Amino acid sequence: MKKLIVLAALATMSFSGSAMAIAPTSRVIRIEGVQAGTGVFVFRFADGSHPLLAPNGSCAYDLRWTSNNPLLGTLVCRVLEATTSTNPACMANRGSNIDSLMTAGDNFTSCSGFNEFNMPFGPQAGLPNSTMFLGESATGIAVGIINTNTFPFLGAEGITFTPT
Image 1 (cartoon, rainbow, N blue to C red):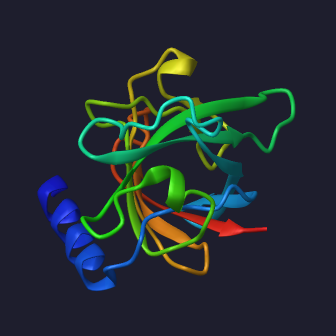
Image 2: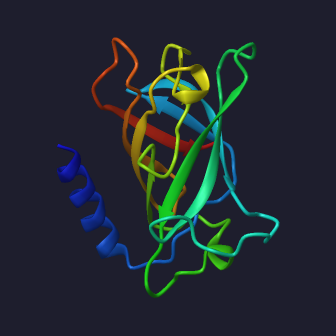
């Protein structure tokens, strides 16, 4: 199933042909249609101190995922956004909503956050790493799947990010 998801995402990306980037605006996060907090994608090297691409030719972002419950605070999900041969510059492309493909929780990143019941998941919560695959449009809406690897939610669930 993971191979099918990756192939579908790559097919979607091949049609866009656009630069890759994501604006650092607040977004409502929903899992299976239920609000699971808010998030902001922050370019990992916003100060320009690291001009190199992240592993596997991607731009690196931190998704700062804040719970609906203020007592639970914020967790970080490290996200990689694919680049294209025509727009490979992360520094030049950061800060815009453009068609793109994002992944988290693979061999290069760790992903922590909150599920639809405000339960924390991922390494920062002392639990297994989660995986996420997203496709973002130029409108800033991102849609995909997440597997939080947290009992009883061991399968893939739908996830959306909508600008506030």
